[in-house]
Length: 181
Length: 130
Image (cartoon, rainbow over all chains, first blue to last red; front, side):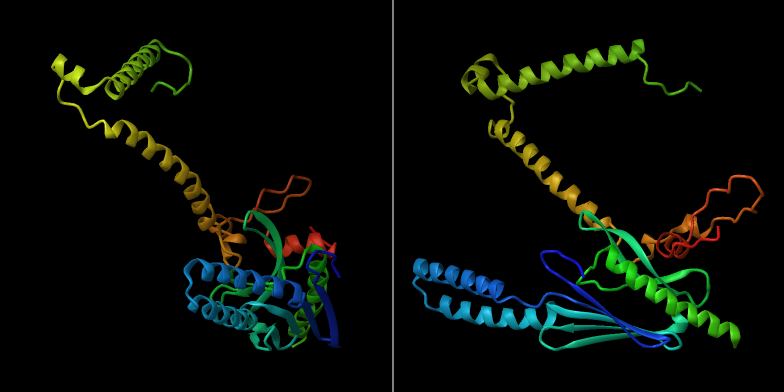
């Protein structure tokens, strides 16, 4: 749990010895910010109407508000991001949007080299983020791709370290499994 | 081959002084051209000048360019930062092609780029055999 102006919550669930799920839940859409945005758009439209005396401005403002809200809820606002790690199968990332849409990506375990906490420059800051390193099929020691996780909630280091430790416990199991085979 | 050094030399003093005189002369010429009315200059016989419009336009162009350059530099920096999903945040050509030196007892280990998995294990899991 982290205390910031926008709180995010981490939940870890263990389904079995080799399967864990981590969900990061962001703050839902606040009524306060929603009404503030609507009021400002409508006030601006009314001011334009007073200037131009064209009533199309008002209907356009209502239209824009509705379409903007739908687009925001369906394409922009992510409510919950979760990571499901199954040692023998793979890793699945799910993002669920505020409108209920869910986006799922699955990476099979043979492609995964490691899950690490990387630090990089992002918008005039240096941030820590969790990422999956994918193996290059031609050269097993090199990294072909980096898949960043929890992109919209961007948890801080304490949250990431917990997820990292848990993930490493699961990933060690796949090494022991492959060595016994 | 003479080494490059920033120490003062007689040639450099000469160049500096010539540049100083030329700059002063250029500035005085610019002021004369901008302020002296055209009729006076014509009466002296000097008729082939650029339009006086440029006496104001060129400094303004220069200042706007300097202002835009700040924004442009900022933008170029942001554009050339590697995105979060690129491998350049983890490794690069030099690290991929580095040679592994043999480990010698009681000697300082050779400098090398440590892979990120190892770094993470040492920092966050608290164990590290090396």
